[in-house]
Length: 169
Image 1: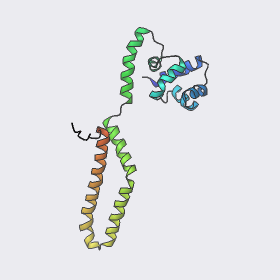
Image 2 (image 1 turned 135 degrees about the vertical axis):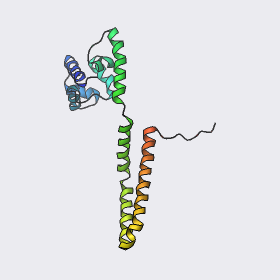
Image 3 (image 1 turned 45 degrees about the horizontal axis):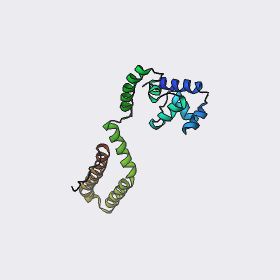
Image 4 (image 1 turned 180 degrees about the vertical axis):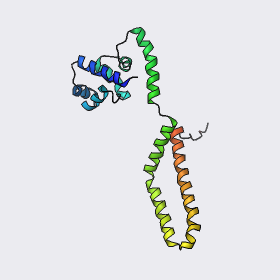
């Protein structure tokens, strides 16, 4: 799918319909800036807007994604290609999902990290310098491992799916 080509097609169809970007945006519940971004090839319309956009412009979703009007034979051929391209472009890799959920866990649990740092700092201030390295090193290692395990359990649950509880049959 070529975003720029799709954008030019949307612009051409909009003009054929005699619509401004603002009028098309109002029909779809988006701003004229969003329509402009589609037409410039910067963004693709959200998947839930493809059917209403096609209806507003008088084309099918398949034609919209192909960026051209299609006859019956072309329509069937392009349908498969467009479906495969849409699925490929809409899927996130495991690496991308893992990175997203790590960042989300860190944002959601920053308080836990801050409390751990405060407790560690308080303990280190209370101890004399001779005892500091003996007690603090294992403490920080344990805290780091505990936090990392919590984060990775969360990430794995989100990336690979939460385990389903067993059902009684």
